[in-house]
Image (cartoon, rainbow, N blue to C red; front, top):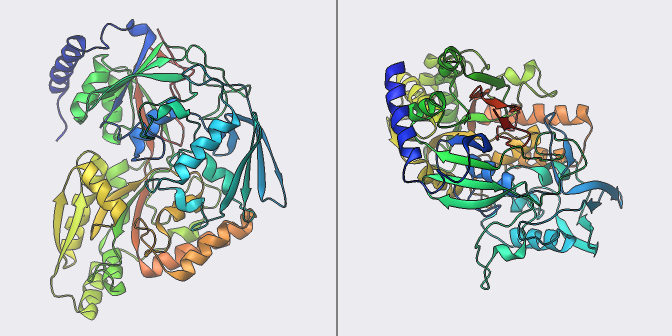
Length: 520
């Protein structure tokens, strides 16, 4: 049931009072000089590439810059690199750095970029390591620094998606200064070259960032995470507000300026209260993960029964209020590759599901579905899926755990089923790479079929749109037959912004951009 406006305001007034008293940042800057963004949970780390999630990505990319970055049109543009060239038949990338300064006042040079790369590449915690070491894509065989402003990446073979992976928001291939670690090599503090620098991280409460006065931006115009990042406010506050009602109230009462990733059923309330609502098609994919190594779910007929038992259209309609269609494929309808063929999927047919269960010899063994309440869409999806599976004859137990535990379980393959959401990837190959792979080597791989892995490998060798489209279609056909995962929909991005904020825009990456934004 929707909460009343009165209830929201009561929560909001309490929140405003809490923010106005006893907080170290409360008097640090005038409200017109501070932009406040609400987060639904704390970040996990301030070290790039380690222990990340969407909120962590958001803050990390305010502090650090990479060689290249994604633009709003999903192409790759300049960041620390002002230009780059290819040679050796596509196996060598030479990047020329723009003049830039780290937060400790030292210049950005190729040496720090190489140090940052080496630190990431040597970390077993870096989830993107396989896409750069040859396990899932081309291998970076060397990073060279012929002069202070030149970085050269050498690959073992040409790659059609190397630049996309280098810009990948989840991979965090960013420039860190070595002073970020202590004398023992342990992470100490984030020293990047971004437009904001860390002032304070009070865990479970907020992250406060100050404008970096010596920031030297790109000559390219601001475009997504690419180009110039000129700050128009003195501080950015990322306020942790786990409760959805409290987040909504915080915006309505002015305690925060930007409410990121709101639910569709909040749109009218926000508009009626004078808030500006922004929306754009999203690239984040909601899905049901199936552990194919599980004794029960290793039976393909049971997985096919699950597919027939779930009404994808009903879930997408309920969760997005018709703003996004059901989509079981990893190819978003907002990309040029999507066509009607990607809509093919086992039809919603509970009777067929029951017949498959009988053929599989299913005897009512319980299926455990992990979910969390931090991300309401994941929880609501799991409730609907539980009911649909039960209606088709499955015995399902919903396991509601905290998000940190669920994410750890995902990273280590400790689940039978999970209601999950993949962060947006700017190319369908990157989304397939998130769940297709050798399951004996990658714990996050959902689908280890050798033919599927081979198809994914072929996507790394060609940039021909027609060929890539056929490879995506072949991958979807295999997923459709084997059902290692049940895609639900690509979530639309919906944000609410206080009317005193000017210049804020939404974009498909689903990460707030704070530069170029001012307050009245």
